[in-house]
Length: 68
Image (cartoon, rainbow, N blue to C red; front, side):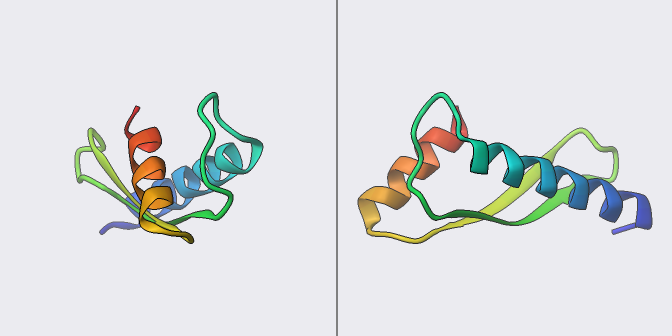
């Protein structure tokens, strides 16, 4: 990953983390952490890795909420 991609992925990670800490329109479990962001070389797609502290139901709820 190039330097520009790394800077962009870190910025996206910061923005997502701030958005999650302020809350979304759909409630998320309290412990959702953005672990990493990978951006394609053409900047058209990004893959977000996150972790959820909690049981399986909380993890599934967080996944469904993040995909909306």
